[in-house]
Image (cartoon, rainbow, N blue to C red; front, side, top):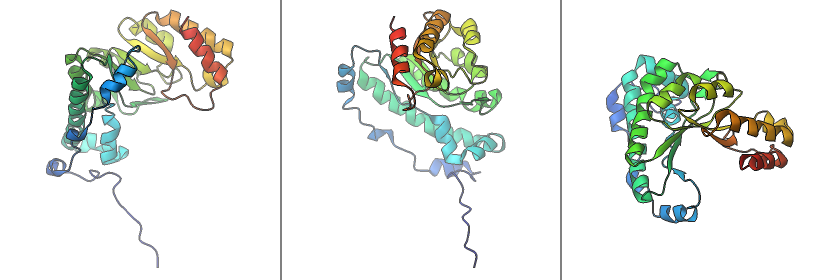
Length: 260
């Protein structure tokens, strides 16, 4: 006898068409967020610029509630369901940030949050869908952080050049990590258009340069990027993680050239 195959939905709201299902869901409760150790961490790192707050990767979290393919489809078929789920997810992060920023008592300099909106070949959704379903909630997070007097930096891998003006428009101050190999992320173009409007952090390629280049090539690239962007640049790899296959001598070269 043939075994039964599972046809379970990839996300709990994959087949949802009734907004009441969303409202009845048992959503995470921010009251359980504990900030008791935050002041100790801030004091231990007081000589550094502190980036903090809830990471708030709501784009991916909402995708998990639907399954990514269903998420993108429901933007067209059931937009009110997507709106309701996104509202709950982002509300959690806003409540979390209220607790974190209050407990920090001015000890955080930059609110840093992130989602990966792009692939190597461009945005995962159209700019119009981004502005309809994602940007308004990014604005809520940014506006909340600004009330605490914080600068704001967004993280996104991939080619997101089409929405960089939107980042600037909602008050984002910095962008990380800008992958120079991704579509539209040419550093010369980005610098010419945005270096006076946005601080760029990243750009030292972990796909090619740091992996396969020589220390001297790394030094030359770091120096070039510093000159290209001027004050609107923070030297950093083009990915948030430095993987084990990066030669240590190339990292040393990047660090040395960065602090010159």
